[in-house]
Image 1 (cartoon, helix red, strand yellow):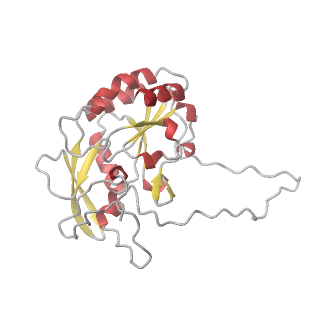
Image 2 (cartoon, rainbow, N blue to C red):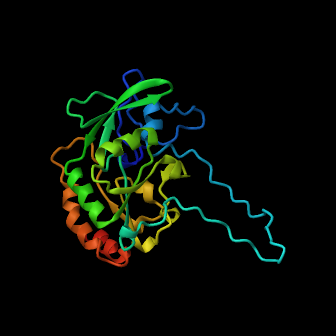
Image 3 (cartoon, rainbow, N blue to C red):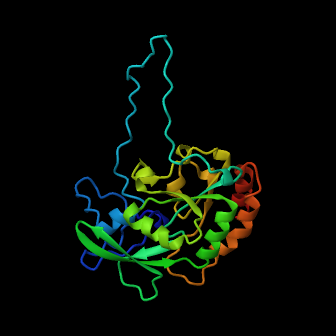
Length: 263
């Protein structure tokens, strides 16, 4: 059985009362003769990706066309994920920032040096989630909130991610927060569709450790390495000069293309 790339899965430990996940948690689907394993509660709470066992979303091209009495076709009302831009952010680029393994790492296993401990109720049972902050995340969020219209966008559930964001974002950097229900479930993955935000795509950046999360818009991405517990990590700090430069451009695509080429 061939394992999928390790970056596709969040490395989160299950609660003590639940069985440990198999050593190849990121493996491809079992053969048809085997039943897939039940998803554990920690995967359903945090994990941004699932096994690729979903069917393509059907498109009904034979649906009847609605026509007004005057013969015109009514325009569909588009509901975007984000509210109207605030006046103070009207000239700023929108930066979508991931949570798990980008800004923090969370686990159900007790961690002595946890920055936060979040109580989360799962199936009527309270569990403690231990959260570690990535080094330099405070400085990163403070400065990003000054430079950009920042949006937290995570595939985790709100009942975990919202209280983490409350404790993490002491400066109000996040103008909005989007959770799993705002993702598009595409071929087994929770994808963050940037076209649904209601912002100009030439002025949107996504910062994420999982390429599958931005598979619809790879040209808008600033990839970061997955972080778990390396307290010597400096990636967020090292990225700040690059974001300082990005904040001044009119179109992000040219600069991001140069960044990918030089990386």
